[in-house]
Image 1: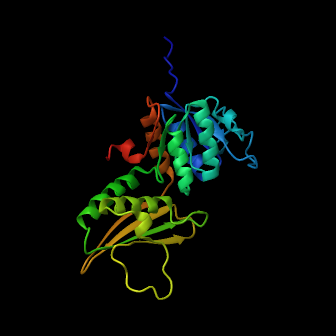
Image 2: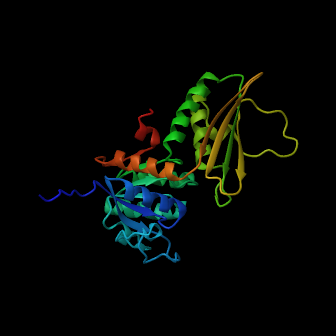
Image 3: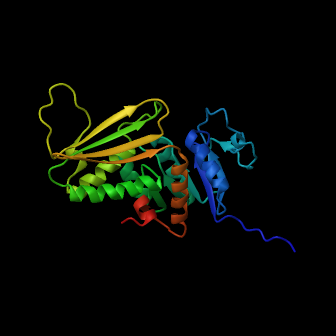
Length: 274
């Protein structure tokens, strides 16, 4: 009797396929029974163009790394993108044209780019979050609860650390933490955030949310929010030891998008944390 075979439900393309995050995503997709690697994109200058996308694992996936966006997306139903804002915007335009969903982990978007993404989400379904880690998003929920309970008498500081190669600061995750806290306090982060302190700054404004950024070595990603009161401090910390957590969260987002036609979602939607 022949063994029954089934086609994996989710046909997934990966942008930035030869980067550190791209490799984690490809490995996670290949390990998932319900997902199949269907496309691999990278910049034209990448030396891996034309090579098998899973060659780094010592196996053949049958999916070459390509620079042409439409070629890379031709067999996919959803794109996972952890690249740069300019690249992501080009990828999203193609997704809209081809009817693909998207999971976006890219950070550093401008307000205009965010507005454009919201517009594109009228036609396709998008999960966009600055951090796809399940643990980070549970931490966000804890911060929301803490901010409401500690709304007076506590100074709030966000401290984040990342590897030396990260190009934006503060991290998208740190900014999202600030947005969650500000929202819980009924504030606008744009009006209360303090991103730098130097020289004679005067006393701390208790209505502000401060940010501190550390860059060095190969730190995957550490985030701590400090609630400093009189006589006590509360610290809520998340530390990432591996990008594998981002990959697993991304696949949960892929599954969440199945059956949806349009809309802009985040990991709170994916994890049911609303």
